Structures are given as structure tokens and as C-alpha cells.
Image (cartoon, rainbow, N blue to C red; front, side, top):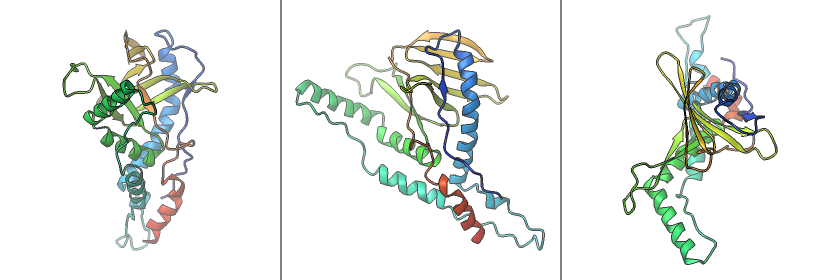
Length: 248
């Protein structure tokens, strides 16, 4: 029933100046070492938020039949309060220019954001950030888009930070070098989708299975840290929350 001690998520960086088919596997393998540490902590905080807390493992040597296990889930309460506070109103884009073309463009952008249901996606991003200190978003081109249709030319997704991450350059610019999203099959084998600012790599069994260019012009996975330390909203009071459960 010991309280797990954590100090925020780690920033994943690389020393390489360009990611290519020749070095992407090596960069990915190094990044996964830090990501696995982050993933373990994120998974713990996610389960804690849902109510899977150390008090449920309580045992008694004396009169074990009287062993109350009450979860006073203040972690969920903290996250819900902060998400409600930050996401009370949908974000609207406004232009600082009086140029009519720019004003029209901003209006079109707001319409696109409505079509992809961005307010709901923003709430998911904020919730992940408040739980585990960071959140990831992916943007992809909408292949089904047609002019004058009721669809946006792009799709937007909130990613689970347990199986996605961003790798930055190891310098003062902290440039996004690549974004990674992976899936794990029933046998534990991982398939990685890796995006740089111009290339997409599909990696299986530590081999590049596919390489192709994309026209997005940037790394299409964006990280939204909750703060500089990437601390979750209840992470710093975990000892207090566990003590409240013990008192109950």
C-alpha cells in the first residue's frame, strides 16, 4: 500500500539533426526507453483517476474479515474540476487584422473546427493533461474531403499518451523531430507509425516496412504539456490522497 513517488513526465530528445530511413529505428529504440518509464507512470495515474488505488490492496493479519477498503476518489474530483474550469467555453479563433480575406479565412477555420468537433477533442486533451501531465493530438489529411462538402479537409484525434509520444531535438530550440503512435497486438508485438516533418515510416520488428512522403509540412503529432514539469493535477498530493483513503 506504499504511495508511488513520481515527479512528472520526462521530455524525450535526440541528438540527430535529421531523421531518415537509415537512423529512424535507432532513434525510436532510444526514445522508447524513456517513453516506457513515462508510460508506466501515466498508466498508474490513469488507473488512480478511475479509482484503482493502493487502498484496494489493503490486508489485515488480525481479524482479516474486518478489512474496509474505501476509495475516497478525490483524484477524479480534482481532474473533473480543472477540466470543467478550463473547458467551460469552446475556443474561438479571431484575427488581429482587418483584412477581409483574413477575416474570411479565420471564419472558415472556425467552421472546420466545428466540423471536427474540436471542443470535445480539447476536453479530452485537457483531461489527459490534468491526469498525467501531458497529452497528444494528431492531425491527418481527410482523404474524403471535397470542396463545397460539409467536411473539413483534415481529421483531428486525441491520442492515448500511453502509446504515443513526441521526440524533440536536444538543443535550445527543442524542435519536434518526430511523432510516434504505436499499436500492440495480442501477442505483444508493436507496430509503429512515425511521422517527421516530411516523411512517414511504418516500423515492425525493428525494421522499416514502409517509407513515404506526406504533404502536411510538419510533424503532425503535437504534445500539450500541462506545465513545464509535466505533472498531473493530483500527482503532487498522492501521499495525502492515500492517507485520506486510510483514514476512511
